[in-house]
Amino acid sequence: MKRRVFLVAAAVMLAGCGSSTAPSNDTNDGSAFDITIGTGTRPTYTWPGGLGFSVSVVRVSAPGTIVWGIANPAQTIASPVTHGTVPGGSIASANTEPTLTAGVKYRVAITRADTKTGFKEFTP
Image (cartoon, rainbow, N blue to C red; front, side, top):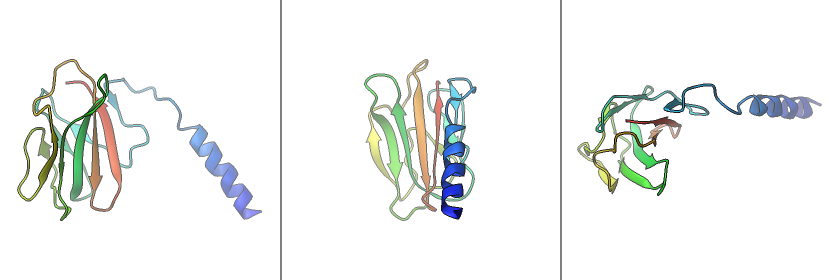
């Protein structure tokens, strides 16, 4: 009986996680943690909760590919990170847009050392 109650409660919680009323250029639905994004076409990405393993930025509109990213096998990427720069000890995993295009929608995803991932859509 306990398992059935848990499954029903989980289904109700998931059903309530549908659409968002947040502006389309500033969403954080379903993210494990909040990310703050600076302004301009080379913004800074800031997150709480410790060091990171990877930061990646995807162009949401066509062609919908990763345009910039960094990773660090030692999981030592410290917040904040500036778009287009590669902190010491990290490697560039993508670098097709070291400067973003104004007016285009992107999504940044950050995976922390604790394996939690936060993401946020934005338009510079």
